[in-house]
Figure 1 (cartoon, rainbow, N blue to C red):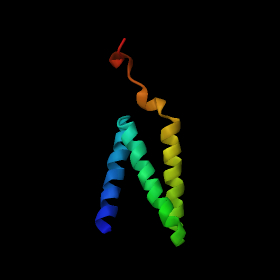
Figure 2 (figure 1 turned 60 degrees about the horizontal axis):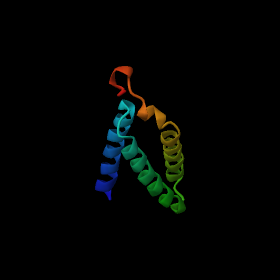
Figure 3 (figure 1 turned 45 degrees about the vertical axis):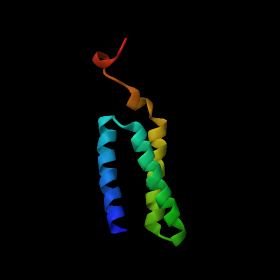
Figure 4 (figure 1 turned 180 degrees about the horizontal axis):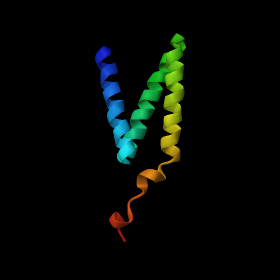
Length: 81
C-alpha cells in the first residue's frame, strides 16, 4: 500500500508540472478523477483528511474541466492557418 501511495504522490507532482506547462490535459483530468475516486472511497472510514483531500481534488477536477480552453491555446507563432 505504501508503494501505491508513493507512486500516486509522484504521479501527482508530475501531473501538476504538466498542468503548469499547459500540456497533457486529458491525462491530468484522468489522474485527478482517479485520485478523487480514491479519496471518495476513503470517506466512509471517517477520515477528516479524506474529506479535505476529496474537496480539494473535486475543486481541481472542476477547474480542469471548466478551464479546458486554456490547454487548447497556442501562441500566435505556433497556430496553424
